[in-house]
Image 1 (cartoon, protein in one colour):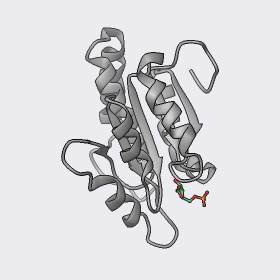
Image 2 (cartoon, protein in one colour):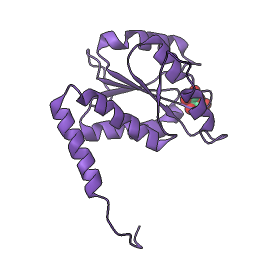
Image 3 (cartoon, helix red, strand yellow):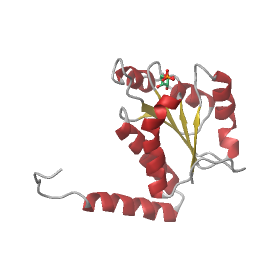
Length: 169
Ligand code: RP5
């Protein structure tokens, strides 16, 4: 379920540009764990480890990866470059940068030229969580037990919303 070096790749790959992205991207990992979706998380920097990015992206489909979640901040090239190297669906998570609060990350990821799509999520934790749910939705198209777990996840979320507000946190 979590990180591992199994021979066959997990269906979801979570990649990020830096260790500093993990506090955000771990929310994607935790959401996949709640949904019972196997993943592998690794640091792949478009700028600092470009060869690692090329190797990962070119091999991903043949290894059995189905969906890639890519988090990056600042001049966030990782999701777009990864999408350029593989036909797998890539969901980009803009990391909330210190200087520009993630608006730099968001615009870097979302403004892809026509022909190479990156499904771009919200800045920060919400984007990481939703990337995981979206990846699960893709996998659930061809996995009935997973579709049932996703339905249960969504129903539990609905049930957890009180109808009336209280003063308690
Ligand atoms: C990007 O640069 C990473 O995705 C990260 O969000 C940002 C800053 O990286 P560090 O300087 O913290 O390693 O490539």
